[in-house]
Length: 53
Image (cartoon, rainbow, N blue to C red):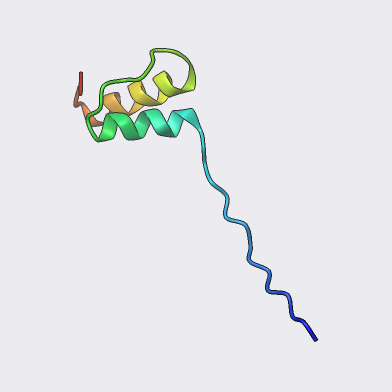
């Protein structure tokens, strides 16, 4: 008899907003100045008060 092991799928957040926030948090210059990425980037800069560029 075979037993199947089922692992729950892990959801991965691939939002551009979170990518922008991360880049700003670690001091990288922005990749783009458009869309959700830029909004997240600016949100993190405003939150921390640190301008990485």
